[in-house]
Length: 104
Image (tube, rainbow, N blue to C red; front, side, top):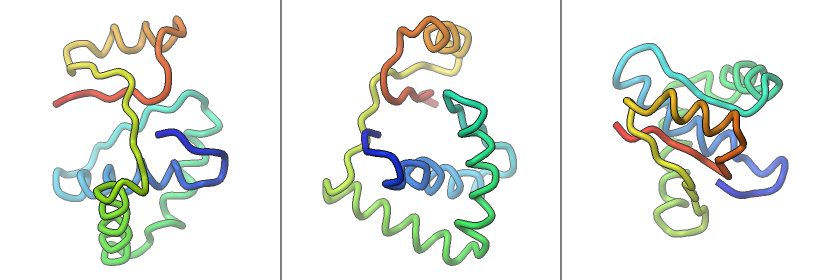
């Protein structure tokens, strides 16, 4: 996802991820480039969505924005789950740009 600082990129990642986690049980990994961003995400989750109903409503609104094209999610790399080590090596070596995802 490409956007400037403070525009809600974290929300763009966490909204669909939190819905997936609710439906599929605990255990959600969110990969970030820095530990500071990891800490920020952990701290913000409880503040952003304390109520599951509100979280679902916000996620629905986000999906509507993505579907309409108002928010564009650009994915530059796709890896299968069996390629996790390669994804990690690519990230460490600086061979990735923008967002990367694992395809399940």
